[in-house]
Length: 344
Image 1: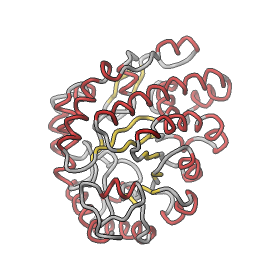
Image 2: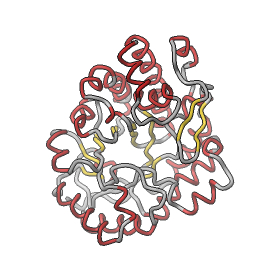
Image 3: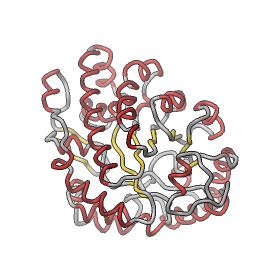
Image 4: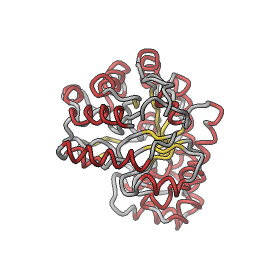
């Protein structure tokens, strides 16, 4: 690595596989969950209430940057926000996740998915992005949910262990499934383009639950919609990150869909992930978030293993293999940031 960057741009340089002074690091779900200052906000405000208030969104987004010293911020939001913004009845239940009062079932439900008009439907979000991008000392990551993952919540009515209704719809009614994913892709494209237009310096597409799919189902029935999202962002010239959980068998596809950076969960070592993804992509990951609740000696050993498997190759953004767990001590995350900066 070359001493050619600092905290303000090392994340973006790593995403582009350019030399950096130290390995950049940020955490999925860093905006909230384990931070006491976030919990203080949540005692007074619900999730959608925060997302409807630009000042609160900016405050919560910035908290981990100030406390942890990370090299990127990620917008405080939720992957179902675009659906809520166009009038779909969805609630984010604490400890559960998104829950839909009226799940998607038939072709008639497509009529509920009108086009997103970000300037009006997501005005507070975009105001927060403008404020943050002008004020943060690090780049801001915007994000959206990939069509499959959003569809899984919408079809199941909430979180699922087996995605039975979703997979049944996907196989039994392929035309309706394709139409649903196309509508959800349109929502993601509109949201992401607006976030970048307001100042987001990178985007992440969360296909969190794509690992539940067989590779042939992903490639034939899911990947085209995600690829259309990435293709629609090409002209914006911002790094595009693609992440899912349990996607070891899909890593090459996650890159081929159009990403610049492939997120890796903790189930596969980084050197094997590099072999599967191939050259031409940056990698993000992949410390097991559960280990951050262990004594520091455990965290340090595991973090060093991640760095050793990357081997100093350009194009690595250190992250957890999924989101920060609520019981994580924030001081451990701060110590991890310092360790990665000192040893990466």
